[in-house]
Image (cartoon, rainbow, N blue to C red; front, side, top):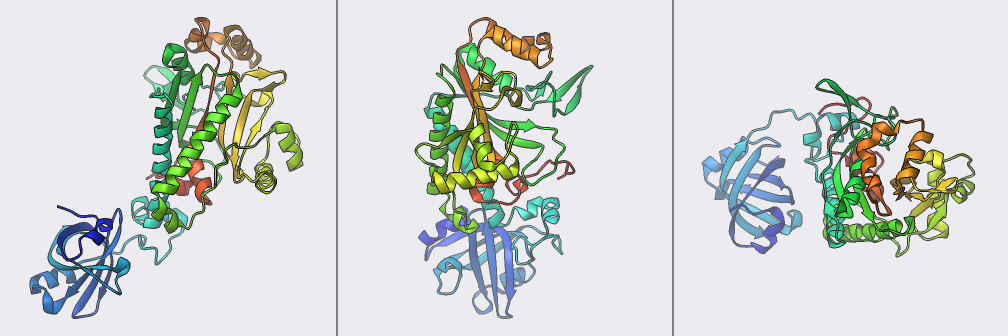
Length: 426
């Protein structure tokens, strides 16, 4: 039975079988050192010519980096080996060879430029440093699901091929759907609202969304994973922010508890989630940033987050009360403003949410105000005709949240296989 490297400390003196990739090789003639890498870490395999079968010694001589191998041997303590453990082999099986030279170095002894890393992403992800990002991201998403299940939410899966955009047709990727024109979904917004009204009341989805944004920056990608929530029978947007506050606290605590090794690998200091995340209105945020208009610029978001950290002791801050013209047609109006919000973290928006309109007549009115035809949204509007509770929700970009929590410089660092303005492969 195969043993993972993180289990070896409990196997001192035992014969075990490990398997993984050849991370590093050193040949000193009569002794060879090999670092074997699996998904949990590294272990040193020490091959002594005097103490091993000559055939096995020759097998080790023929290995190359990134070969996939299986080693059987005795686990021993060591004063010099990594983690204080080494294996003295009694058998070696080569499971797969690797071509040489490698296009990049998974051990990171030779750093590759970012484009080379993305072009050879599978090799790049063999680095524990880079893989740690996605172990943490998986923990965040798992924590997201875990919290919501306990709160009585149902996980749902909605269409990604749609007839119309959630925000009136902007930033859409068109596709040919048999004889009809269709689009890739910008979000599951319409469907999650419809499912609230269908009686599920509390729903969430983890799934891809697509935005045909032209800009190609370190904070944007065109396909990303959205963590979406919608729930009914709320009082107003304050209920939504309170739920997200508790959700983020659970997600971050889970990472702190379960990903200590990965956080240490990345030397990351993740932000504390306060018991009550502070909130300010957009008008107040614009004043802090010294800006005007209907939204904050990237520089303004940074200034507001600096203010929040210094004056409110929080790296998270909600921005509330956005103008109607800045928000989608379904945002609940509050005079000229809306009961909506963004959540900023370390200078970047990671969440957009708010209360939605639940009255049929008002929603139709807002659709018309945007110059849109309500007939084109009949499939969506139907639920509002037959009794829709007050409701709302939000969406978190998984890659952006990972990026900001870990202090990464580029969202592509938190995306397995990025899709941006210029990249379609791998």
